[in-house]
Length: 542
Image (tube, rainbow, N blue to C red):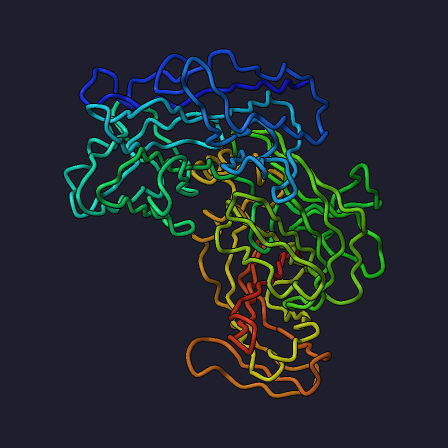
């Protein structure tokens, strides 16, 4: 059962020129947060995993031995997520304006930092300007260099990076924090990302902070102490393997919300998702973060084949352990209503690049591009089908754009086609076998030719697919490239046929990958986008 451990400490700046620098300090004994003498600290609490945690409210001010300690900030780390910090004692982490603090499996540390007052702390008892960096995720100081420039006096940069202090100048100085901590000798590199500057102490209007800007402006001739921290967060690394044939999307039978049955494979004759059948729908989501993360996993059904309009089936909120993966099952089945229907998953995670938070089915058009970063994607599609073909014989399949949004319906949609050849003995060489071995954690249940680093090197086949309309509309060749422009009279009837002929010299066991891309131009309120579909042709004996 996880514990909640409180620390009430005060910040003590370093002395310029002393042997102790930001790079060799030990936060437990110096730099400099130190235990506040005499203050009552809440006792350690045992908490239930999965419960919501609300930290105790600390004193706003505390006096001991002639020194007054004023609240600076509270940091809560160890809960599910990247850590939370607040400088407002009336609005602490866990309150209504923050996301709930969810107890995971790790120890929760509540660090409350105070600023000590008891006389001037600068040279000769005068005012001092103190700047430092803090990691909200780990709840510790960042000892890395963190200031990239100071203007107009660039020579002051070293003092801030080494000792955390800035000389009082007769004019304003602009301090710019690094977007990520600077690699620093003797200090472990950090992948944290700049979150915000926070003023802990100083006169009204000094320093000046503009929102989430990396710049902090300290006014000249300050007559009182100034303390400000650059706060950083370790970004969450939660993702799904993307692409339009994602191995992380699983369709299975029979439908269940608690366990997975027989999976529908990719790249064999059993890949067809039959109309009307209730399939189980699951997704594997990965967390490379060093902490537990809560993520929303949304399941979609998008008909047509290369359509953009679909139905939001379900959203599951799950906690994924640190450096782990989780299989998430939809509470709703995936049903092919006829023709080609895409199974799609998107994820939404705070403090990460994946922050797509749909409110309903209408948001399907805004699902992130699964090809933008296939290995660490914010969405994944299962959009493929397999048919058996014969050497020298014709083949065809029908596909559509689904129900076109009104903005897209008013403009031609581009169709691009490419065919790649996979020889029957493709996987029978050492290089391919090494790649398969290196990618088996993700791609162990898909044909090896769908591993991106192998697929991109496949040769282009001597097949020139043709497109003709099934629904009423217009078709024209594109002026540039090998493709077509399609327009349809009825935005709800958008089917077309793709056909070709298998090369006469094809061998049984050969495979041809017919990659189709529907290119939607920017139209009205919708951005330009591309939707992919893969038809797999498996050659058999006649």
